[in-house]
Image (cartoon, rainbow, N blue to C red; front, side, top):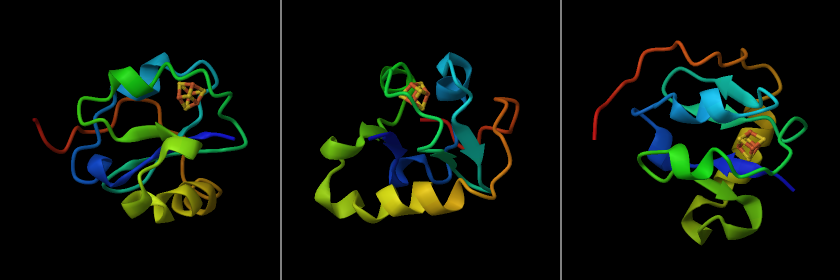
Length: 92
Ligand code: SF4
């Protein structure tokens, strides 16, 4: 089980989630973040930090976003560690 970033993150890439994660589970893609399922401990701290409600517990991911479960898992493998200093791409 893990938490998952979904499509609402794309072209927003807020960094609020990164700073509250106790295990540094976020990874950086060009226009969004993903969560490494091997690192996430399901603390849920990041969920309420996201201004665009992009993060879900994997059992709660909306059906239209199901592909993001595998996307997080696959892309996190080679993605660089997110340290919270990347540019925020959009406001609101
Ligand atoms: S649920 Fe907790 S451990 Fe998992 S990514 Fe969010 S803040 Fe990090």
